Amino acid sequence: MPRLILFNKPMNVLSQFTDRGSITKRATLSDFIDIPGVYPAGRLDRDSEGLLLLTDDGKLQARISDPKFRQPKTYLVQVEGEPDDAAIEKLARGVELKDGLTRPARAEAIADPHLWPRDPPVRFRKSVPDSWLRLSITEGRNRQVRRMTAAVGHPTLRLVRWCIGEWSLDGLKPGEWRDASHK
Image 1: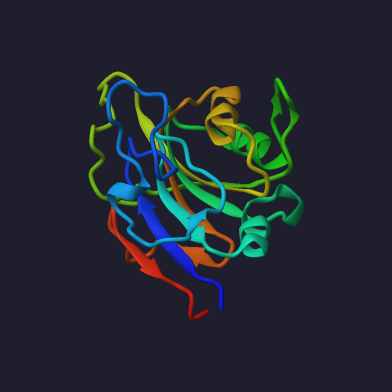
Image 2: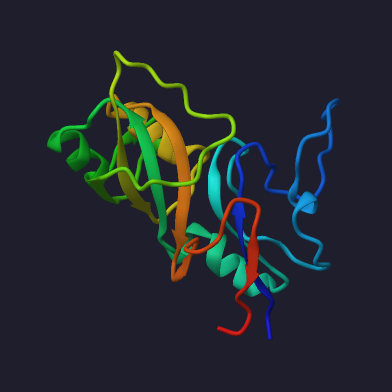
């Protein structure tokens, strides 16, 4: 049976087990997970938080991470400003980026999800409001969610991946993982 690990990746942790090419030591998966033979199915940028799946099965890894399988990935996104209905509709229809039009997405404004504190905290500015979106995409271009929100005039302040397909971050604190192999 394939091994599947759900990990809540904290901010400033690399989505790999080693840090090659850096003069200063950066946190990696090996600082949190000591399970031989598992590898990330996809990636999550260093400045993003949330669900990262790891497995020892190549076929499962491909099914999770390859865009051709259109596995939905849901993000909770804190953005600068308060997107209006037109901005949310544009996110849902697809946004024109330098590398082409994004696939249609699910996008909605949500109330503050009251997540764990981020370290370092998001910069707070009294003069610029912020708000939260839930955005589900079925592709995984480099820094796609950040580029999408910026393209509609609302730069991302905080990005937390909450779900990948049927797997959710629910119940996992930053730096915690659980074995979901029994599913």
